[in-house]
Image 1 (cartoon, rainbow, N blue to C red):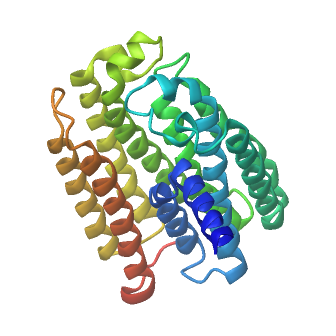
Image 2: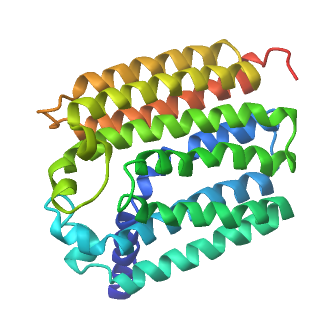
Length: 299
């Protein structure tokens, strides 16, 4: 019993380390792209490999991020309670998890296609490099956005196996996801504006101040909404997806209304609740068009 309890506790610590629940941000868009590419009929093998690839890629990136940021996390009051600063997970274990997850991701890419494997190598490098970008560039938010925005394009390519005219659809969705993620990462970084400046780290809030950074986040989210609509037109999806995108736009407006430069007390609601709901709503809306209402005629 004690062994089982110990194993369960270990799993919980590692799941908390990588914020496994935050997979809700990228995975629904990757699956939406995959379903649109296959007209809602991916093989079970393809579906499983895409899900595992997305989860393992994110696990590798998050575990490495916690390893790379361990000293900064210990100094920041907001992050001092994370697993490595508290001694719940050792730096070596976090790095080991990143290596294993990265290897599993590349293994999934290899099983998908030679093209996926070749693209998987620079993708993994991009994901891991994010942990160091804030040390030299305030564009770290865009870097993170592109890291998650890769997933819809990758999922579509896993189905098609090549670039072609159809690739414009997932490309537009990938850019939309990148802008969406970059925007809410800017908002989240407002919490560390003073800490980043004190320790020479780069972020838009540290560079511009919270008020101007929040306007930058609004512009990114406006671009994201346009990209979501473009994907629905190119995929093509129908009225349910259109309604879902409109609801997502309303949720983004609500997210920004929750926060003020001098009041970030509702950041968890703005960050996780609003953004998690956006991903779930858009995935569900796309599924309604694919499985219930039918897709409009398109390429």
